[in-house]
Image 1 (tube, helix red, strand yellow):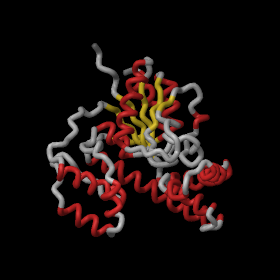
Image 2 (cartoon, one colour):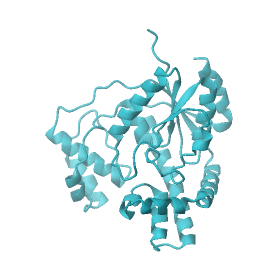
Image 3 (cartoon, one colour):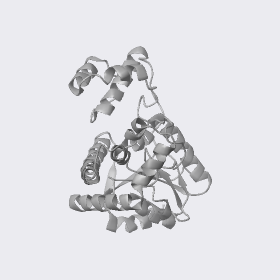
Image 4 (cartoon, one colour):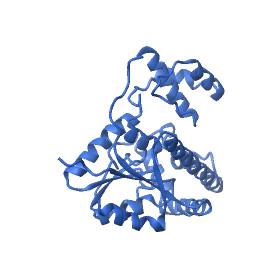
Amino acid sequence: MDSPSPLIVILGPTASGKTRLAVELAKRIGGAIISADSRQIYRYMDIGTGKDLDEYGTVPYHLIDIVEPGTLYNVSQYRRDALAAIQEVRQAGKRPILCGGTGLYIQTLLQSLPYSDVPVDETLRGTLEHLSTAQLAERLARLPLPANYTPDTSTRKRTIRALEIAEWYKLNPQGKDDSPPIKAHVFGISVPLEERRRRITVRLKQRLQQGLIEEVQSLLDRGLTPAQLFRYGLEYKYVTAYLLSELDYPTLFARLNTEIHRYAKRQMTYFRKMEKDGISIQWVAAKDFPQLGQQLASE
């Protein structure tokens, strides 16, 4: 039996135009899109997560609107759901195209990151939250780590997760994940820095005009707490603060705009980490992407 064609992955920072390019490619090669976005899984969170569902047209999509807001969802669940979606797409006779900007989700799927299934330890996290970033790093340095695990300490949240894994490994030294990696063609959308900055600001203005504030208010009306919304990313954090009268509108826009720019920079940092970890990313300008469609259509 012929082996399936490699998974196509389209990644890039926020506002790089990933969805539009993925849809164009799917139409050309008979594909279906699988989201690699950690927030688009939630229902009723459309504008703030940039689902842009009107762009898909007749192109099938997966892992969007699959759980209720407030539901706990982690990277190991995403891996299982993404693998099932890839199989479903192939059984339907289509080519799976993974598209998104959540680097951890993409990397976990492609490389089967060791220990991604380690359960969350809320008690441990409660203890770690009281430590400074420097104290977290010191504690991690004192713990034994498995040979096949490289901790990600790029953010405080990821350092806490690394500590969670290290503490689990101390009690389960034989635990490991031997799942084979997935064969994939990984393409990164390259956007000049100034153009990316312009797009981010323009898009934020559009989302506010399209009803981002009303969307966040509707989530509060559904019973989500401000603390929950703070965890769902920058748009929900800052708009919630605005609705609580903690920010005025000019401050909301200025801070949110700045933080989204910083978020895009962090995304690029993680993509470079993925490359160091052995994932080959072919960076392509949006204008050159149609040529790739011709190449992939012939596979």
